[in-house]
Length: 400
Image 1 (tube, rainbow, N blue to C red):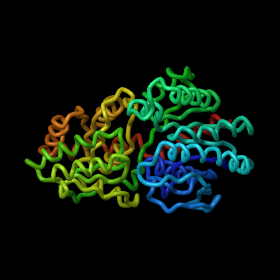
Image 2: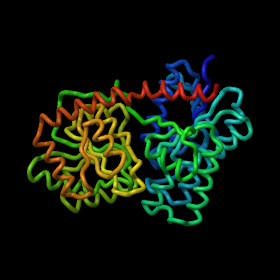
Image 3: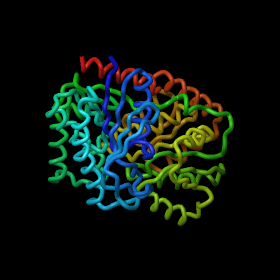
Image 4: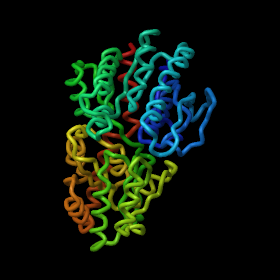
């Protein structure tokens, strides 16, 4: 009998985020494995301000074999909404989705709620309590940890305390927790006293059939994804300015986010308008070619203890396209660079970033070797088709 899976996610295409594309790929691969997949998501509204507001209560359609239901949610204006507007967006969707999930209760056997944002767990909790169906809580990012370290949530505040309590209830109520890395597993296990057996590692991965190498190269390095507070992009820009004194190249920033305006101001101040290129949001199908024709991909995480667990999806995409990556930060990104031999991790200083990029640019054969090693590594361990098989096997085991 086919597994009937309901996935509840705040982001789904045409929303443009790493989690949006990951959930789409997972859904497609589960359909190809014989599952019936229903996805419940808000009307497209991320990044905020980039979509026309949709006031319909719901819309439904079939997309590539997936039964997609989009429901009404608060849709913030502009690229940097107020705290109240963001929280309305985060909280209205799970509360509204509870009604739809209960209405459709005969059409699925198991639910998967994916985070961030963490509030999708509200739906999972109530549906689990009311229907008794199996609930998988899919954690792609430690949202509270990151928010505290970046100053969005005050440490030891009432908001943090309530959020932690909420997470603990979700983790103890769900049937299984899936996480991206060993570091995330250890943090959840230690912080919330969760059994190790309840937490399974399901990495983000990459579609290696779409993200693939090409022979034509251009003198550019690239960053793709959210242009947000957790990224040390200002130092990359300043390193690129120094690199251009020796090696002329362009730096492409593909995406959007809260600090884009600040970065544009820096670029203007440093007279780098022709060197640093902001492409804005692009269709997903254009991203693989932009990466593959680049010399190096960058993944500049800030050096914060609370970000040691982070392993951006963009790093898998760089390696899948056969280009080496330069990362910053500590923890999982260092482990991946060492295990794959597909990248280097610099210190979070302009000088160190400059030295690592120049080192690769002056060693063409090394870049080729690292690109080949990275490609082979993700093909073997992080292809999304393989990951979907592991996910389904694990899900069916728990359901049985």
